Image 1 (cartoon, one colour):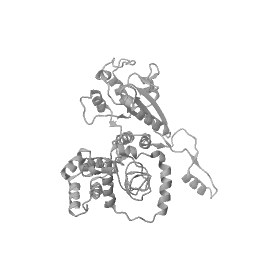
Image 2 (cartoon, helix red, strand yellow):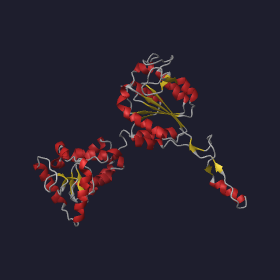
Image 3 (cartoon, helix red, strand yellow):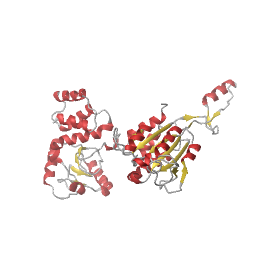
Image 4 (spheres, rainbow, N blue to C red):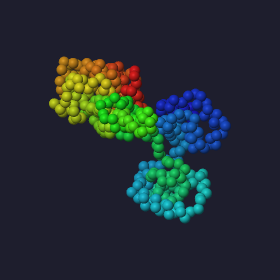
Length: 400
């Protein structure tokens, strides 16, 4: 069983070393587990997991290897439906607080509660609300949710008092993973890395220069002489180019979050956003609809947006080979005598810093994705995950 656990952890992406595994064996030999599966869970996680971003992977591996041990306490979809009373949550909290105020400190036998929970789970065949025996809601029972018992097993619902012995079926660390697709807040946090402060911008002197004010005042015999300076502002200029339509439709909400995050980060010196379909050609579009004629020339973009712009290209690179290599590969507009690959090469030549974010990038070398492989060789490509976006932003800000 333990060898299978080790192998499953590695399959889930956890880099468990042999030394860490031997440490876990030593903990078992020393009796730190105390014959408790729960204790084993926490000790194993403490020894084997190096970062909270891997907690969810550990939980998945643990469940896969030890679910047979827990099968007698599995909760079905029908029971979870019975226990969903989220619309009555506030009323439940009020009743629970009244009940708790009347109770003295309870002495709870954990093993007794867990055994009773297993027995109820086997026998219960209907929904129960209130009461003090079955698994249900808003009662005095030790099992369920929104009740007034100070301990027990919470099933379904949302935690209120952090008093349950266990939370059945919850993947509490899903949002901590660094390989998950992003949301708006994570975009904003990542874009904060794009900071390059400067006081050389063409802006008025509106900020107090404390050091110069002190020097000038001292040199003026103690008579106050205030010195102002230009505020330090982020000098980063950002060009965002986003693939729209076709195979990118499933990622529309994700792209909208990215767009909103960029434009909420109003500390950039300048932000420009254009769109393309599959590959960039002689024109880039002003809107994600990519309507014919609603565009600007790519050459115009080169002339008006200087080489200091940091460029983020977002797309799945899932184009047909001819869309990348043929001079007639653009079936929605003109090529102007160049292939898509040649237009991308001009972008690379024009701008010093370019990264490509791909929401479904294939791992490693993917010869069956010819266009993606070719683009990976031209631009640094990162998967559009928490970790990928952070590494892309770091890449944009490095000197190499």
